[in-house]
Image (cartoon, rainbow, N blue to C red):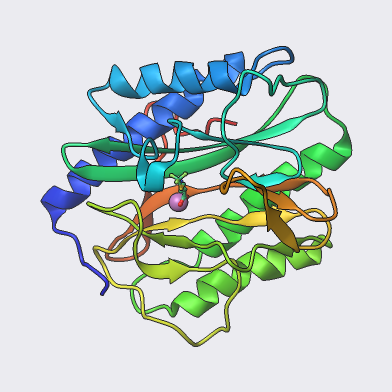
Amino acid sequence: MIIIKSPREIDLIAEASRVVALALEKITPYVVPGVSTARLNELIDGFVREEGAYPGELGYYDYPASVCASVNEVILHGIPSEKKVLKDGDIITLDLVAKKNGYCGDAARTYLVGICGDRQKKLVAVAQECFYNAVSLVKPGVHLGDVCNAIEETAKAHGYSVARDYTGHGIGKEMHEDPYIPCYGVPGTGPLLKEGMTICIEPMIFEKKNAYKVLKDGWTVVAKDGGLTAHYENTLVVTKDGYRILTKLEESGKDTI
Ligand code: MF3
Ligand code: CO
């Protein structure tokens, strides 16, 4: 069931989302060669808690960390580790949920580590482009299938593929609410967007084929062919005539990357 949020609830989701955006911005200078993903996790955990929020991923279905830290061929749910040390040319996705006053915000960014080549830069930029092409269609009365289709079409235009079994989602009291928001869709199908819906649109793209496997830890999702992956996600609210992205810092008006 899709829940339409009241203005008060939207304010609460916006506050949790602000915490996510702030943490993803504050972590940027630390995402450098030589840092471990465990250290990034520890820092982000602190950034979230000092805003009076709680890292929503910690303990979610027993997930053991405060952020998902997914490097290169890991597309989703990489578990932070002392052993995973970043090096020049890596790309790392940090996917973070903050919960505050009972409501959630959720965003993901893929960061370039040190000196990266065009291969890395282009994939990361296209994940963002997929998001913006999709979100630009968002307004009341639009079919969700139109929005989802824009993600896949954008990725395909660059020769990339999209995740099939992992999707964006509604958000509110729960991190994952209806509707599912896949990275592909058929225009003119699916639920109609309505004012007051709060949703996460999150292109997850593969450089090569979208076949994946889950590692023995039960979480880490990797591209089977070892190709690179990128992910870009924001929480947003559908407004009277469009949308408002909530996981952005208003002062700077910018993303974290
Ligand atoms: N933040 C992820 C999402 O975009 C969910 C992470 S699942 C967890 O939906 F178990 F790691 F928390
Ligand atoms: Co999400």
